[in-house]
Image (cartoon, rainbow, N blue to C red; front, side, top):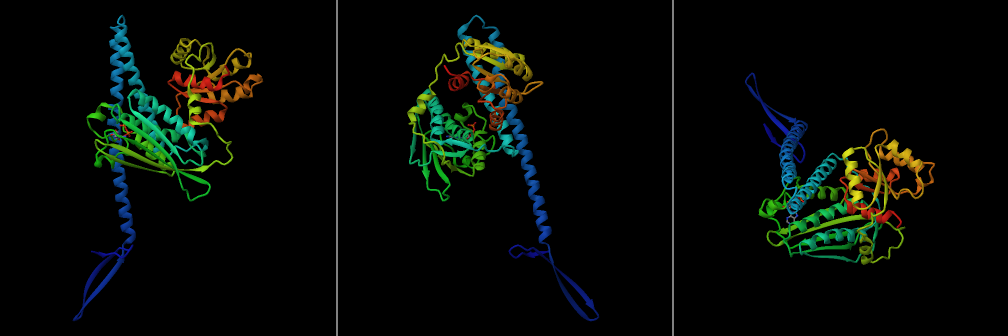
Length: 439
Ligand code: ADP
């Protein structure tokens, strides 16, 4: 019979009644059961965690099978229909547009699921590098601005009182956090609505660090109070007529929260249904003191981003791609843009071909990573060490299905200049060519 516990102790009291001669003796026994109690509590907790992990796994599988099937149905269904519409260009165009939207949704879903599972298994590490925070914010804003223009939304970025522009942190992950939050602001704000992105530097206790407050507000559909408690749970979405029509996986906010936690920051949401939402993220970074003074203005950053649409015309690519169908698509895409290419089917072949190339033969190497005989990292190292003097200077760009921050780092470590994830986005290739190839 437990009779109570002091602050941390749990005692069990037992009363023994002994009759000795004509004496009645009562013996009180106190046994310390704190340890057993702790063990029982741990077992109960572990059981609870196992039960909820199991429930999460089941809901994950059912969510996944639904979320993958939906865009797959569109892709397979419409490709079938296209066979009957070959001589109807307007219909073909419509179906192609829908197939492209569904494929990019499917790709986003796959990326999010893999990212989430990497984060949850503790495999994700932050890639700390020097970066210019203002530059990042402006790039993020530019990507979002394109979307807001399509929806006739007003989008304003306010950057004020930033004393420290150059910091050390994981720039790609910072970008992912704000693209997720701002992307949602666009999705869940009706056309013509207002979105703002405000960044301020706050006082920081440690002298070597700088602290920033990022606030994203929208006047969109907002959220119910009871849903907000679940917003950071994987696969959670607020069910309503708007979200049902807007494509999403319910993973973006879970990934965002995990990244912010990894960075030691905080994220808070404030929202009112029908009025809008506001997300506040606080992050601290180490100050990068040795960085060159960056005197470019925001509009100069913007101008740098404008890429020439015909930049691929006349460019010559040496490529490594082992998958036949991917090689065919790559060749067709490049030729469609007026570029030419020679494709090797593995790492050994491209290294051998490279040793004999002349100075004016190729502008860039596009390197697949997973290949038979020699992978893209090894091939890049071999090219960089090659006797051919071009080995030191030719731009090498990873073109791979491994799209995570760690993979990008591995490509850079091997000596590549940039990274393009598969399926290849031509706009991204154009940006990379604009950056790496002299006109
Ligand atoms: P999704 O892929 O569904 O957008 P997220 O994890 O990014 O998944 O967001 C989870 C849910 O949170 C969304 O489905 C939506 O219900 C809600 N939500 C997120 N951001 C906003 C916002 N700015 N306004 C209204 N609802 C939002």
